[in-house]
Structures are given as structure tokens and as C-alpha cells.
Amino acid sequence: MNYHIYLENIRAGEKGLNPYLDHFNVAVIDVSSGRAVFRMPVRPEYLQGAGFMQGGLIVALADEAIAHAMMTVLAPEEGLTTIELKSSFLAGVNKGDLLAEANVFKKGRSLIIGDCLVTDAAGKSICRVSATFMLLRTKQR
Image (tube, rainbow, N blue to C red):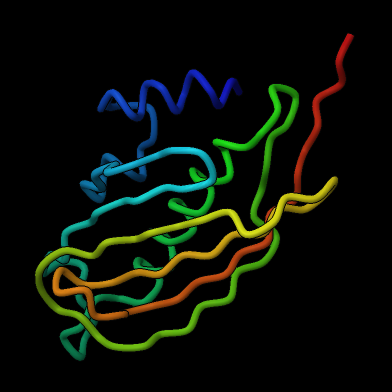
């Protein structure tokens, strides 16, 4: 996959490139060098039985934001895949929007590490996620 072309099209607001973003109505606010900011609405159908946003959906938003931040620093022959996620839930949320701000922490030769803080519309911290991705390299001819 050519991540640079993909990111250009995502920045331009093109739909149909990422079914997850489309399905959950995730808005791409910023994708720049080592950074990505996504906004996702909290909808009634995303709530769990206690009336709060289901945690896995929050973590999935953070994972996508981190992956997109990482795509901005990849070489053309590199790809990536998530190998580890750690999430810390800090507060519940049941309305409004979530803002996921992700940054690349460190890129090595075989691994890349990123962090994401998910906040509500008022800026209250909802979830912190750290992720390790494996760098995948395609063979060059």
C-alpha cells in the first residue's frame, strides 16, 4: 500500500478508503508529521449496558489515530501492523464527541511506538493508549 497517497486522499476527505472511519463517522482533523487527530461522535448505539461508551470502541479509535500518525513517518517500502496495545481508562463518556490525539514516540529499525490521548469535547481525559507496531518491509527489486 502506498501510505503517502492514502494519507493525501484521507486529508482531502475522500470516503471509501477506510471502512472503519466511514462506519463510525470519524472525522480526520489533522494528519501531519508524526501526528494524527481524529474526532468521533458518541452515539447512543455505541453505549454499553451501564450507559457509557463501550471501551473497545474508544481503544479502536486510538489505535486508528496512532496508526495514521505512524504512516506519516514510513518509508515507501515500509508497512506496519499493531503488535501490542495498552489502554488506561480514565473516565466514562456518554455524549458529545471524542478527540483522539496521537503522536509517534519512537521509530526504530523494526518497531515503532505511539501514544494517544482520547478526550471529550470539554478536554477531559477519557483514555490513554500506548501502542507498539511492527514495521514490515517489502522486498525491493
